[in-house]
Length: 52
Length: 485
Ligand SMILES: Cc1cc2nc3c(=O)[nH]c(=O)nc-3n(C[C@H](O)[C@H](O)[C@H](O)COP(=O)(O)OP(=O)(O)OC[C@H]3O[C@@H](n4cnc5c(N)ncnc54)[C@H](O)[C@@H]3O)c2cc1C
Image (cartoon, rainbow over all chains, first blue to last red; front, side):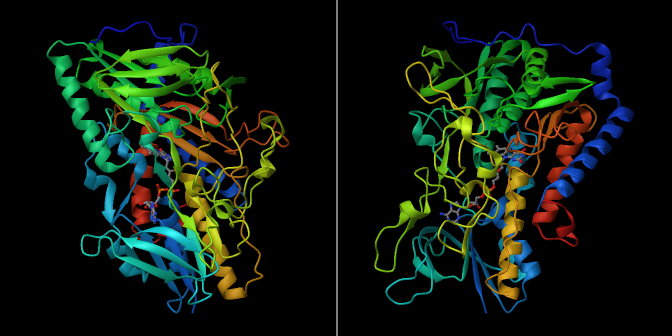
């Protein structure tokens, strides 16, 4: 790795980290199938709501 | 018979062409002029850029589709518009230069009754010294070929990590006024994923270098999300993802120049910095493609049709009022060019009236501020809207009311995937409604019911589904028009 002088990297130490339960939720096929359906429904609703 | 000429066969122009072929009978001529023989589903270039997809997965030839749809295809680039015609005829015309292998360089003037400018962005790598894959020291994912080169370079770096060498990878924006932060955001997490899959994440420092003053700005001034009963911000949501993946973020940065292996940048506080890198994917700033405009007598009227940025002026408010005074109503609704009722500009080709993200300059006066994005979904909607207007004008007469689709009324989805595996893939999926915030209708500028950010496997499925659906649609296969833009 090249030697680097310090650069102003944003301090993200206060950003929330997901819990293990949240990580499992993000990978759970049943939950994610539901989320998939909800996301698509939302896109369709946006398309219908958009005045065009 | 009417002649409709469409300049550009990208997301907006191709959508317009397909709808016009559906709406108009074969007695009218639809001509698409575009320099590339292929259509490219640009959002999936990200996957090409990490080697998860090949070029043939994201491009296909346009000519067979246009033949099937009765659309004339001319492989050429437009160079000038003559909206009042020329000395020979008062019929408006476009000057084009052929780009196909057979006819390269041949000049031609084609006449039109209706013109759609859907020429997208000019990739201005030249705005930053040393930027870009052709004459510079960085890679890009803006085209499928750029993405292939990016993937090759990425895998060289991964091989070095495997050999025990620590590597620094920089992904982000190559200039202070870039747009398309969503693409760089998506690419950085695909790179992170690639390094993890190769088992070398600990050997790599990954830095996201952006002109956004806050994470999660995305050129739209950030978003407010409703999350389990709390209002939260896209900044917090995005920061969480960066922290979780160990990606460092440098904010408010204007890349000044790129030397082989070192990127030099200025930050909003006016300080200058240098970062040595082994791999750098930095997006270029965009302008309009070079198009001139001439009057019948040859007088140059380019500045009447185009903003200094090269984007076409449409039915928007370009009075240049202060940022604090702009409103959603300033954004275009019909995309009709100023002063002409038979020219439209859609997708990236139209000139936005003002910044969505707050304009900022560094302590030295350097503008460091994301330009407004015009992403795929709105670009497609604009193409369809203008096709509907033209079809009405042809069938009902010139007074037919123009169809409308303001970015202050329409939503957009940005799905930034990380990884392309059906079981282990993940994505940050965002929806926003409307794209241009409207504070007169929503306290947070956007509809909280539709403006959401979610992380998880389902977002990856959405991205994959969109890839297949939009390629199906773009091929004009049965039922294509039932798939929304
Ligand atoms: C890497 C990357 C990832 C992206 N990911 C997403 C995403 O996930 N979701 C999303 O919504 N958006 C995404 N975008 C943005 C999206 O690709 C653009 O919003 C969209 O392509 C804009 O459509 P357009 O028709 O205006 O321009 P383009 O699609 O760029 O099409 C412009 C067309 O004009 C042609 N042309 C150029 N010059 C001339 C000329 N002189 N004469 C005639 N024709 C000309 C070009 O060859 C091209 O065919 C991404 C962009 C990039 C670069």
